[in-house]
Image (tube, helix red, strand yellow):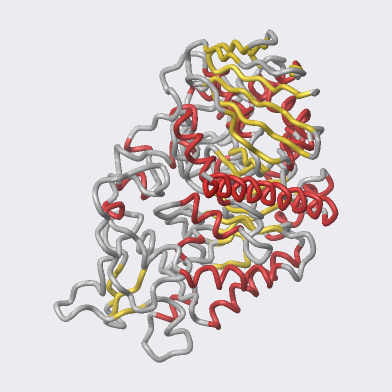
Length: 572
């Protein structure tokens, strides 16, 4: 009995110290002006945002023309997907020159103007950096494949075939199929985690590492505020090229970054992603970035346990400032999924900081993952917004979520993304989430482009009805609800940096407490499409009416409409 009490005392002390540590971190954050903690980010996919030159493809000057709109949302930072020189086999994620802008998007001068105007409006700019691989058209790879003895021979990952000519091991690519492609000139295979036109860089090579640092310095010296680092989990491979073991059982879940239709999912990828050496490389990059004051590193982290892996990359002040996983962006956002994913992060995050998102340019839009047949899309979109913007961490909004855009249903002949095409019809997540933004309901191409021919992806009629100009005039629109909520959130320090704790609630109701110093806020959500109630009797619970949506409290319990939500201040 006494041993049991002692154990409880130890656990209570542990949780007290953990809470104290978080308060110290928050105080330090305030003093050091760590702007990325609790800010709101907005992702722009350039090809689909706005086309200023009429070629049917979005560009940098198009983004410049919409910076006032972005600023009007109340967001603090903008993450811009790749705009660098590229053959566009993977639409910019196959880079052929890290330090120049592809003519499709404009010029370096256009980017400098974008940066200047964004900073004038108080917006931070993060740009994508693809350091795990290049295009096969990059001069480095062209030199590397010439022979086995030149100065760049080992800048990529080359390996001899097995005696029977087959690839060096069983590693699979995200594209579906072996991660190795034969090169007749060197009579070796080269590694690619994605399509064959994206050879993997050898980041064990100190010369390659230095060149990546030089690339980072180039953009930081121009004034960018940070980087979103693409596919961080794939940067360092197993040096012995050992084959991955087969995955035990058939336990597919949202913590994995590949669908079960991809044969890669049948492996435990212990030798291809999130290797221990990756952390050493991450700390080296962070030390380099620290030479520029006030900059931020955001990591994309995939793998077999993305919540844990993401947390690993952002813990301690020697690694990434933030990381995000696939736990929410791939999920149906059910109460079970939310409590599992968020709970796992909160259990282990300690001094780390998560970036939460519910969608991006690679994943089916959230309104088609969460109860896709539910009729009241506006209520569903507002609920998802309030949930995202009240979690502990930095929320990232993907363009079009503020308009409530659903996934575009495209015909097979309209698809252009190689991943969507290879996994058709099971995937179709990328292209359907990347269709052009609808700006004006009655304009040609919904105001995205003045071209008289086809845009790079079609604009669905259902998206045109949700155009920004139409929603700006409607006080109850999804767009205006985003603006109101973000403005309100800015005044709530408790949501920006406060601690997080789940509160046990009935049925489909999700509840959590945010707290900071002596202040507490209860956040309550109905995660279902049916009315819900919850008996919860506590003194001094005061509704924050300006942001409540179909949620009421009578002093003894809650009543919530389908996808209703409410925020309540504890005054005692």
